[in-house]
Amino acid sequence: MKIKGYLLGVLSSVSYGLIPIFILPLKQAKFSMDITLFYRFLFSAMMVGGYLLYSKESFRINKKEASILAVLGICYALSSEFLFIGYDFLTPGIASTVLFIYPVIVALIMFFFYRERLTKLSVASLLLAFAGVIVLCLKGEGFEINFAGLGVVMLSSLFYALYMVIVNKSGLKVSGFKLSFYSMLFTSGFFMLKASVGGQSFAIPSLSIFLSFIVFAFLTTVISSLCLVYAIKYIGSTPTAILGALEPVVAVMVSVLMFHEKFTGNLLIGITLILLGVILNVIAGSIKSRRIKMHAN
Image (cartoon, rainbow, N blue to C red; front, side):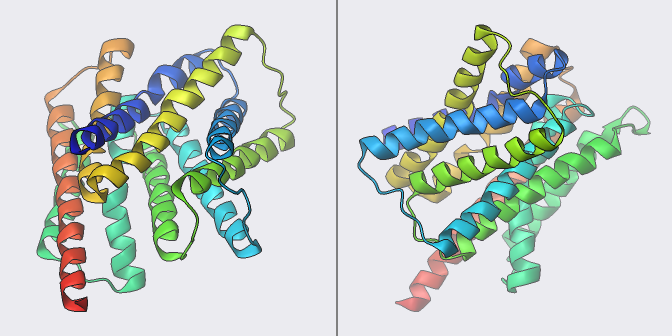
């Protein structure tokens, strides 16, 4: 079971890291991102909903759960929105790496708003992640990165971190699949509303674009979410979170191999520092939760 869990954790990270393959050609073709994201999350919700029907799990939620899930959908939608805007300013490799500092932002939110103590390991992880972002900003003689792009992707990371904190602190008593289903449904609703206000057409111009939406939804959203749930079940949340470090690595490889991003020394050092920072943060969280359990017993 452990090997199966590790394989599922790797598959979850790899599938999520493939997002640039689908998004960049659509952006280059000037296709609406709102419509793209609407169909991505709508088809994802339909697929996860199909799984819920197959497993005979109830779709029922109460008003409190519906309001929390709606907020989660908005957080997820804004995270996606800002990430894809960030692709206009930064390379996919750098954007995906900066997005990955969300566990560090979670630690900061927990420190400032929930008074959770930062351990030495947590502080070290924050410094490493921050140093990694600085290194990504260095080019030649100094800072040459687009700071607007960096700020936009940091907003994406912030909203993903808020998603995680709300899931953790809201006391939601729904399964991982039901959480994924309603999050995706509300996220698609956000983009449907945005596209409608903008007067955009929901018509899918060709069969190839329709199929690319289906594959995009299945590979980067459904497979990633389902594998994540089962990986946590088989090996626990800490090893699964550490395997999540493969996400930006895959995105960088895709960016370098398919979209001809230059693999510079700064990119390598920046990614390494951020990954080390995030992995340290996960380990620090795991140690802290073990101590809390020991004191409780």
